[in-house]
Image: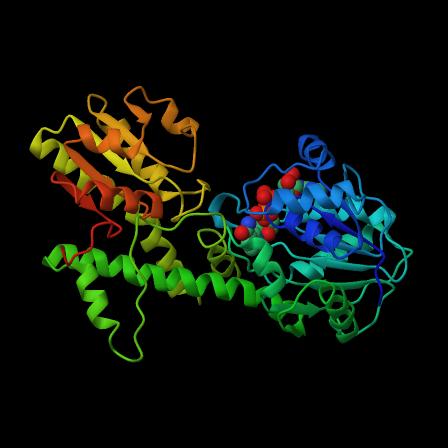
Length: 419
Ligand SMILES: NC(=O)c1ccc[n+]([C@@H]2O[C@H](COP(=O)([O-])OP(=O)(O)OC[C@H]3O[C@@H](n4cnc5c(N)ncnc54)[C@H](O)[C@@H]3O)[C@@H](O)[C@H]2O)c1
């Protein structure tokens, strides 16, 4: 199958880099987004998200005319759908964005087109997408798992890039590609071959959907193990970092590092899709989510106890992002912890250090005792330091300034246990 024009629906953290990389391979790419500001920004050759080198690729592909953005889909040979899939109340997956995207591309679909869903989705979402498209286009035949070929090829291809390395990983990572039928898988493989150097691993749509959820649940369960260990160690007075270092000398043990919880919009969200699909069976996965979600409350309680016991007047909080060395605050446990500490202690000054943002998020900016400061300022006037995100920039500053001689609740091993 050949592609001279590809449409990417949803120009966020996944869709925009995908559109730009495809355009850089000489394909005409039409990016579609419901947000007019995003469409304008991209058409000016600029980006609305922080991702290394993305600005350069977007600017050059817009300048050469290979990439342009629109608000409403236009005809193309293939459509890649990368719209959000959050959860609703009760942790149920919300597929309404996929439904809206399906309604918008249906009118421009032509016989022989390929539609690929990239949004992280519960098992069965690609079949559901086919159904929505079929309802909107009764004149076209859509494939089904019975192996019936259709007029349109439909596949699922999950994304597994790491923010901060998206452009490199888009090209180098292996991709799981699950077609509704084997010919759909082959059609989708020919699209990804345009820019992926990693292996293209063919399977069914349902297995591909499950693969993405499995990868993120695996990470969540392993982080929960480390977080639970940190609580047990706290209870029995053992240094968890030393413990993990020692245990990892076992040739078949590799325990992750505990932290402030789990954030971001992938690992903190996707395992719930498995729980929603199989609530009686997904017991470990549900518990892992609960363990990780509970960690911020434990940290707030520990810090608040210390503030009360020692009559502390000034606290420094190190890190706000959902993980080290990124600017992304979405679902960040550190934001919730900072808020719990500042809101719970209105007479205590809370200095927050986050080198990757230039303003506090609204839930913190609205608290009069919380402010964003440089690491030097925070350390110079804190009675208590709370380490939440092990950013390289903060770790280097601590190294430079020497291990803080003050009270330090270090939840992410800023200062190595060996000191
Ligand atoms: N960001 C990641 O690191 C990552 C990694 C793997 C998988 N994913 C998955 O990829 C999907 C997209 O994630 P993201 O981080 O790019 O989200 P995002 O919020 O950054 O971007 C989504 C974009 O889609 C647009 N949009 C919403 N509805 C639309 C519609 N009907 N038509 C056109 N545009 C529409 C939004 O305006 C937004 O610009 C999600 O399912 C997510 O779970 C994300």
